[in-house]
Image (cartoon, one colour):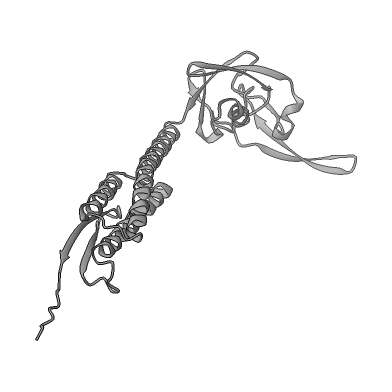
Length: 264
């Protein structure tokens, strides 16, 4: 709704000058412009606001603006004023328009719509949060499995430290179990903090596989000071996709040397 630009004049009252603004109301009546700050001094009206399947009854000063009505509705609906669109008699109203000047009276009906762009942003934010939670849960499951494997590594380490011989396949099988968890991390799409947690688990698996390498070498040659009898290498490949997940392949080669003493 268009209104004429307010005109101004200066009135002298008891020696004090004050500026008065005038505005043209519908019907051609020129009246003193209302001070928006004093809207609460006027009569109160109750407005029925329809928001989808929800209905609200809002009480506001009769001379409020639609912008002020939006701020009241924000507390009722959770929608920020910039996310709201208010329609009265089938037309959307600007924030600067006054309720009483467009015909809003006591028990008038106003329709509230959510701004489509705002709604899409909220949906996108909701999907992003759901994706993060899904990634958190997936990483947590892997972490629980790695914790179980950690107990087996500790038990295996205690056995080797006691000098008890352990079959090589025990190290190989346990390393493969860690690889399975590593591959699970590869399939997790994560962002933000969830991505950080996934990276932590990748590095933790790395450390345990390296630990198994050392235990295997020690188990094969417990009396060697430099573990030359068994050479175990673990090759880690970092994907260029930025996922930072790793695949590992164990390549073990055993070199056995024997020193023969010749008797005379």
